[in-house]
Each structure stands twice: as structure tokens, then as C-alpha cells.
Image (cartoon, rainbow, N blue to C red; front, side, top):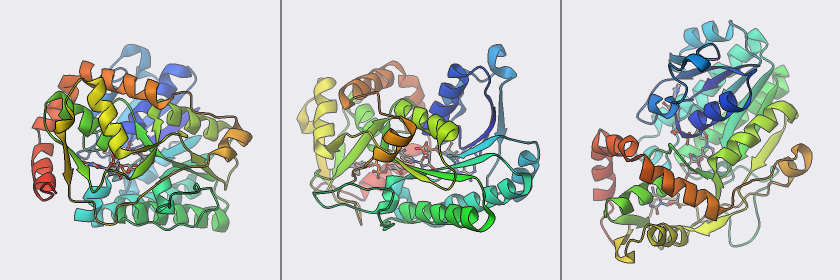
Length: 342
Ligand code: NAD
Ligand code: TDX
């Protein structure tokens, strides 16, 4: 199977490429990535320039908004395109929304035009549970829930989902959308809460918890998400949406305390800071459809997933120390300097 992966140098995309190439000897992957601040070819060092993979893996530095590049690439013939490429951080979308609309909405539409022209077999849009907005204390998001995005990030992802739907309805393109909950695991950029808090705790730096710390996310270990995407690619029905969730709701404070306990660090490192504007209170995913129709279930509990993740960050300090001491340092100081303690 010949697959074009977009955004494969980011967190989930790189985990997906490693999973696919290491699991299926018949899979060939081309990875197109713009290498924004979040793209890192070190995530793929297990396969980049390795003889055993060089006939099955190719990297191209490029932007999905570049029509000529995408047209050129898709003219080479692919069985599937998996679109991970995105601006993915909610806080950044609050600071500067334009790039989110450009990449997440326009980029998706440009890919769809190429799918139409070159008759690619499948287009999987990697979306998010955040398109559904926020839940109260009860209930879960189903595939039928209304789209009520609250941040510029989630609005841009909802916009991309609607463009996908339109290209399926109007042009019968073979589009499938997946909407997954919060991922964690190796190679996650340390601006997201779990890697930020693990690495801050290791460095004895305060852990900035937004608001009252009682917001709830449904956590999934990234490898479980990658396995779900593979199954959707092989068994999913065109035109359908599949929710993917870890069945693992936790408050942010619970996760923070767990990370500190596991690293044997004091709770005094927790610093409550000003809340994120428009902060979604609770996400919870009903994943019954993918479980019943495709036979997928998450294999990791939060306990096993977080242990693996903490061990990975302890064993890969040079990966994240390089990021935290580079350009990201300025972002961090600007971002958290503005959120002084409550
Ligand atoms: P990430 O920020 O780690 O990676 C995004 C990748 O896309 C980077 O490698 C970046 O260089 C690349 N990219 C950005 N703009 C591009 C462009 N214009 N052209 C080509 N490449 C570009 O993000 P992630 O956490 O790996 O998320 C991947 C996808 O999964 C996103 O679409 C995101 O919305 C979705 N998602 C993420 C989560 C999560 O918890 N992280 C949950 C559900 C869905
Ligand atoms: O410093 C922090 N302190 C804090 O309390 C950060 C960065 C976050 N938080 C809170 C905000 C959220 O309630 O932790 C929770 C998780 O925050 P993020 O890691 O930024 O993730 P979230 O905003 O939930 O979005 C993530 O999941 C869905 C991804 O970034 C998205 O790409 C994905 O679609």
C-alpha cells in the first residue's frame, strides 16, 4: 500500500509512520511536512537514512498549502492520503489564528482537490473531539453531536471537517473523518500539558495549571490512536466519521499530581495560573461506533500509558532539552509570563 502522510514529522504523524513501517512490510510511505516549530525529523531517526527502510520511506519538506507541490505529489499515485498536518496548539491559536485557518482549512481543501484530480483511494482527515465544543458533567460526544468549536484551533478543525463532508457529498470523494481525544506519548512537543509537566517536573520548574485545574480531558495513548487510524483506513466506510477515545477521563489536577508522585517531586511545584480564555470544561468520547463496526479498543490504561511516557521523557532528555532551550524558550516566557500566578 502506498500512503502519503502529511505532517508526519509531528507528534502523532511520526508515531503513525513508525508504527506502520515497523508493523507492515508491504507499506510504503511518503511524508510531506513543512517542518514548522512542531515538526522534528529526529522523531523519525529510527527509520530516516536506515537502509532497511530506504525503499519504503521518503521525506519531502513542503507545505500542504502549496498547490503545485501537492498536485505534483499526488500525480505520482497513492492508495491513501492521511492528513495529520495542522497547527495543533489551542493557546497559540488564541495568540494568532491566521495560520490555523491557512493550514488547517485551506491546506485540507488543497489536498481534497488533488484527491479529486488523481483519484486517490482514501482520504483520512485526522480531526479532533474539540470540534464538538465543551460538555457539562454528564454525557459524551457521539458522531452525531453538534459541532460547537470554542477556540480558533477547534473552529479551524471543524471548518476542515465540513470541507471534507462537502467534497464527499458533492464529488463522492472517498473521505473518512476520525475525531480523537487528547493523545499523549513519546515525541509530543513539550507545549502540550503532559510533556510540559513531565519535563518541568524533571527540571524542578513550576507546573502552570490553568484556572481551578478541574477541566477534564479524555486521554489516549498515541499508539492506540495510530492503530485505530490503520483500522479505519482498512475497514472504515467512506463518508463516515469515527470517534476515537481512551475511555479515560481525568481532571488536569489529577494528572498533575500523578506525574509529580511518579517522579517523586513535591506538590509545591504546582502553580495555579490565569485560565485559558474560552477554556473547554470537559471532553468525553463515546467510541462505540469504531468499537462495534471496526473492532478497535484502546489497549493502554492511563496507568500503563503514563508510565511508558514518563520513562520515555526520562530516557530522551536530549530530545526535549534541545527543544526547550531553543526558540521555544521565548514562546514559553512570553506565554507564561503573561499568566502570572493567581
Ligand atoms: P503536531 O503539532 O505535533 O504536528 C503537526 C505537524 O504538521 C508538524 O510536523 C508540522 O511541521 C506539520 N505542519 C504544520 N503545518 C503544515 C503545513 N502547512 N504543511 C505541511 N506540514 C505542516 O500535531 P499532533 O499533535 O501530531 O497532531 C496531528 C493531527 O492530529 C492534527 O491534525 C491535530 O489536529 C490532530 N489531533 C491531535 C490530537 C492531540 O492530542 N495531539 C488529538 C486529536 C487530533
Ligand atoms: O500549561 C498548561 N496548563 C494547563 O493547565 C497547558 C499547556 C494546558 N493546561 C490544560 C488545558 C487543558 O485543559 O491542560 C489541558 C490540556 O491542554 P493541552 O495539552 O494544550 O491540550 P488541549 O487544549 O486539550 O488540546 C489537545 O487535545 C486535542 C491538542 O493540543 C489538540 O491538538 C487536540 O485536538
